[in-house]
Length: 182
Image (cartoon, rainbow, N blue to C red; front, side, top):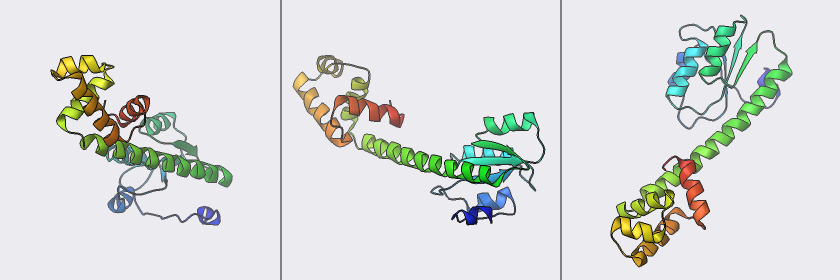
């Protein structure tokens, strides 16, 4: 009721497993989980979500203040750890922050996937040129390393810039680094 009163559309589940059974990779939002639940506990749920590379932030609540469990939950990836009883406004504030964080994570993930698809579109030689650019090699050094002419390097470099949709060398380096492909 609290979340609905704030204009949100929450879904409830009888267990962590019932939630995991319907979770899709494109799910957006956040999770509010208790530490103690039937079957899988809240920390195990966090570990399972992390293993699935789920981007949903998780707020863990507990009625039993236990520093060890709090540390385990935070290490497992909890966005927040809240002890019962809690103020309604606190939960609403945390949920709003988690929803914004989830939007940011989804956007960053989409950008990363776009860059990775662009990298995959490069030919083997263009990828070699990109790798050498990422190492800081000049056109002359790239030409020497690949035993091709500097003019040919310029052509490959232009193809890389075009396929990667980079307007500058710094943008190419930044997007490649942010994708994790370098």
